[in-house]
Length: 146
Ligand SMILES: [Zn+2]
Image (cartoon, rainbow, N blue to C red; front, side, top):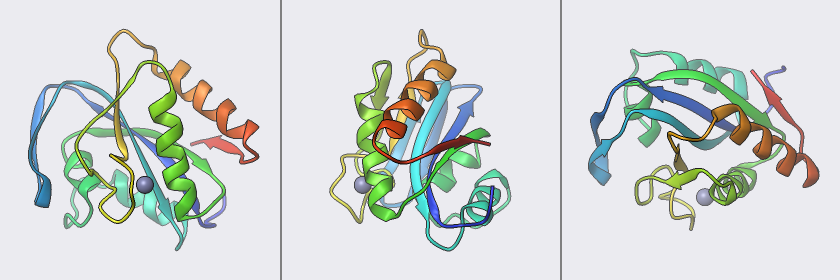
C-alpha cells in the first residue's frame, strides 16, 4: 500500500465496556465489541493509520478517544476523497448487523449522523467487512485490507 490519499474504515476492538469522554460530544458509554470508524486522509493514508494505532498521542479527533482505549485491529482502505469518507459511512450504516454510535461522532463538519458504528455481538466482523468491500467495489472504488 502506498502513502497516497484515500478513505478508510478503521476497525477498533474494545475488550471491555468503556466510558469515554469525547470533547464536545461529552460522555459516551460503549459496550465491548468491534467498532468501525470511517475517515479519510488527504495527506496520506499510512501516516494517518499509523497515528490511529499509537496509544500515546494528543487527542485531536473524536476517534482518538476511542483508539486510546481500544485496540486498532485493522483497516480497509479505499481510493477517494473526503466525500468518499461519507459514502463509506452511509455504506456501513446500510450493512445488516451494524448500529450507529454517537451523534455527530467524526462528522461535525459534514451532514452525516455519525461516522462511528458498532458491529453487533452476534455478527461476524469479517462478514461485515466482506459486504463492505464488495459493496464499495461495485461502486467503482477498490478496497484493501491492511
Ligand atoms: Zn460524513
